[in-house]
Length: 157
Image (cartoon, rainbow, N blue to C red; front, top):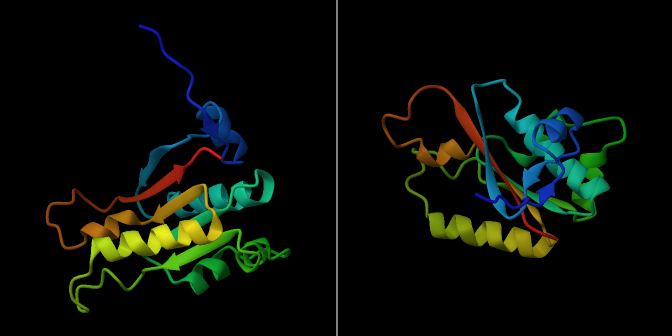
């Protein structure tokens, strides 16, 4: 059996890029799975920050759990790089944190897809992260425990 090499998008996280053989596969989804506090959002945001800062690859973060303001505050650094990248249109945060709230009622996955597509087109994003994507399934029983998921996608430049 012959295996072909898969193009990778570096995360810019040295140890992670070493373990993954160069980063996340381009054009494919990468699921990051783990319990609360295991670093899923950190990896996802670093993937976007490093992509926009070092690799010329704009990104979109779709947040199902936290507001855009909270994300910016949580990742605030002295150089305010995340804020600068957002201001420059290199990173866009699509805040859908209230969309899956059962008290609001049902929401449309088609509408969500349109919002994501629009954000990708607006920024020219080649990196897309769905942060805490399991929120889409909050109404589904038997989810199998407290672990959560993030999904990072990288498209060939």
